[in-house]
Image (cartoon, rainbow, N blue to C red; front, side, top):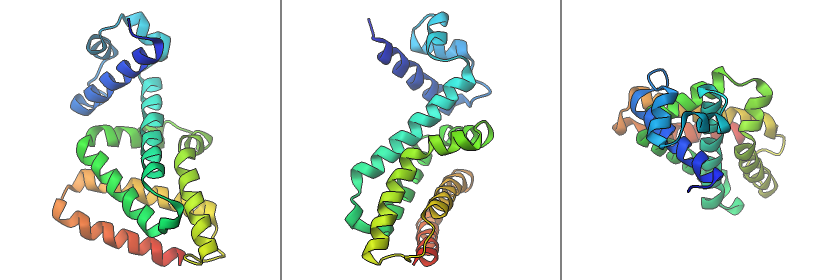
Length: 190
């Protein structure tokens, strides 16, 4: 019998697959329950509603993204490498699960209040802040940079990149777009 943590993971995994396949509007809680092979009441032990599930899914997705960046970068590698990896990762996530990526961003932007947005993005903000502060000390970026504002701008640009990639989906343009975005950010912070 799966543990409580395992059941939660199973529900989230099932929801991810169904949301990505059918979209949020066309996915019913009953379909998530059926795919998860749990009782309907069990769903409500973990989530209040489909919207609550979506919020948790958003939190988990952004945490996974932040963990990936932290695991695959080091402060000494600098901001340019972090930006390159950040954008590559969001594009990969968008390619692998385009509907889910849009759903996560829609959930973040429509449902969450400003304080929730900050909490949700805190792991990513921490990684970016650590890298920017190191780069400031190393002289790679401007010493008068407002780190908090810059982090907010970078996150917004990364979100925008993911949305653009999903809606336009021109693989041949993405490398050029990515390069221009990195150069744009680097020019702003140097």
